[in-house]
Image 1 (cartoon, chains in turn purple, cyan):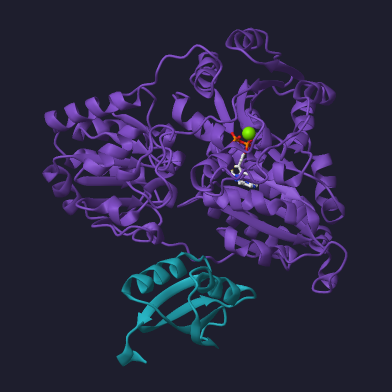
Image 2: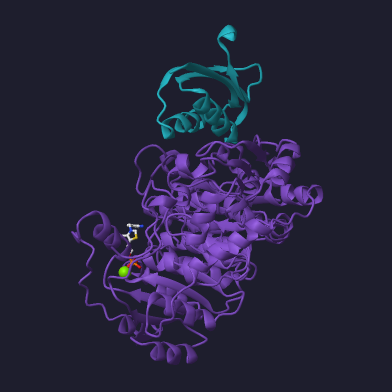
Length: 551
Length: 82
Ligand SMILES: Cc1ncc(C[n+]2csc(CCOP(=O)(O)OP(=O)(O)O)c2C)c(N)n1
Ligand SMILES: [Mg+2]
C-alpha cells in the first residue's frame, strides 16, 4: 500500500510505542498535523505555547518514563526555538526525538521563507541528526532515531523532514534501511576493580545520571552496603539512593553537602558510576584526585579520561557492571571508615527554624508529597536548595536542568513530567526570574487541567547571580535586582489557574491544604533576597576552600 | 605538540565531513591536513586527518570520533604508516 511521508511519520511513532507528542504547528508541518488530526484516537498531541517549552515538556516526559520524548515543530523559527531544549537534553543525556518540518526539497538552499539549516545548527548538541532527502528513507530514519535516542548513552536526535517529503508517497516495499555504525561495548575485565575495592580502606561511590539511565538504583544500594562505602551523588544522580539512607551523602560539588566534600577528600578510592566529572561536581580536578585511586564506569568510552584520568577504566552499562561486581566481591565491613562517615554526616544537620525560609519552605512542601511525586525545578538558588533539602525518595522523580542550567526549563518539564506520571500532582520549584522565562506555558497547564503546584521562590532578585556579585564582585548588583511589579497570583488567575501569595509558614500550610486538583496553583512565596546557597566551594576550588557561613 | 593522523572509514553522504570536523572544532584543535577519498565500497569513504595534541588529546579525539554514528572505524596512524 502506498503511504505519504506524513502517514509514515504517524506509523513510525506508533510502532515505537509513542502515545503523546508535544509541539506547535506551522506551514512546514501541515501534512503531519493533518495526520495527527486523523489519528488523534491513538496519538495525543499536546499543544504548548512555545516550542522551547514543548521541547522541555518532551524532555520532562522522557526523564519520568525513561523512553524517548517526542517534540514536533515547524521550520525556521519553530525549529530554532527548539535548539535550547535540544541542547538541554543533550547535556543531561535525555532521550528525545525532535521532528522538524522544512521547506519543500526544490526550495532548500535558497533562503526560502522560514528555511534554516536546522541539522547544521543543532549538530553540536545532538547525539545524531538526519535531513531526510527521500520519502523511502523516512521510516528507517525514524526507527533509527528512536534506537539512537534510547540506546547506549541516551540523547536527542533530530529528524528534519521537508514538506514535499511529507506529501511524497511510496510503497512500504520500497522503504530503505538506514545503515549506522553503533559502537559495541567491550568485554570488561573486573579483576583490577575487584582488587582495588577489596584493598581500599576508605572507598567512596560517586553516582550520577548513568545510574538512573541504566535503572541501577537497587544494585547501587546493595553495592554500597556490601562494600561499606558512602555515596555522593552528582545533581543528575541525586535520586540514585533514597534520602535518609545512612550511606547517602546527598549531592556533591559546588553546592554539595559538607559531608560529601570532606569524605571525598579523605577517601582513598573513588568508584565513579555513570558520571562525567563536570567542573561543577569536582571543582579543582588535580586536588580532587590527589592521593586516590579512581575507578570510572561509564557506557560512553569518550567520558572516561575526558575530565579526570581514571586508574581503572570500565566501559559498560552501570547496572551490568554492578551486578558482576556484586557477584565477585565479598561483604566488607570498614568500622573505622563507617564511624567517620556517620560523624561527618552530622555536619549536614540543619538548625531548627520556624519562619518562612528556603529550607522550611522545601521541608513543608515535601511533607505534602508522595514518594513518587515528580518534582521539577528551574535554575538558580531555588534549584540548589531543592537539591539540598528536598528528600527525594524514588528514581525518576527529579526533573532539573543540570548540564545546560537552563532558566525556563521548569514549567515545560513539569507539564511533560505530570502527563507522564498519570497526571498526578507535580511540583515545580521555580524562581521569580526563571518563571518569567516560561510562564506563558501556564496556558498549556490550564488547558490540560494539570494539577501542578508551582512554588515561586520570590526573592525579587536573580538570586544566584546576586550571590556571586556579593561574594566576588564587591556587591555590585548589576542587573540582578528585578524591580518588577508582577502580581503573580493575579497573573495565575488571568491564565485560569489558582494563585496565592504566601508570606508565612502557616499561610503556606493553609494553601497546601486547599490545592485545586484540576488546574495549576501558583504559590508566590516571599523570601529574603540575601539568603545564600551554602555550603559552597568556589569555582576551581577544593574542600580547603569550602565556605560554610556568610563572610 | 605531536602531530597525529587518524584514518577514518565513514558513511559516504552529505553532512558527514561537517560532523567530523565538528569534533575537532569543539576541542579547539586545528586541522593541519585533510583528505577524503572514495573507497572500494561506494557507501563508504576514507578520510585522513592530521592535527596536533599529546597522548591524552589523541586518545580523547579517537574516542569522540568513534562515537559518531557515521564513523565505521577510526585508527591512529603511526609515523611509519604514513
Ligand atoms: C537562560 C538563562 N539565562 C541566564 C542564566 C544565568 N543565571 C543562572 S541563575 C540565574 C538567576 C536565576 O534567578 P531566579 O530564577 O529568580 O532564581 P534564584 O536564584 O533567585 O532562586 C541566572 C540569571 C541561566 N542559567 N539561564
Ligand atoms: Mg529570584
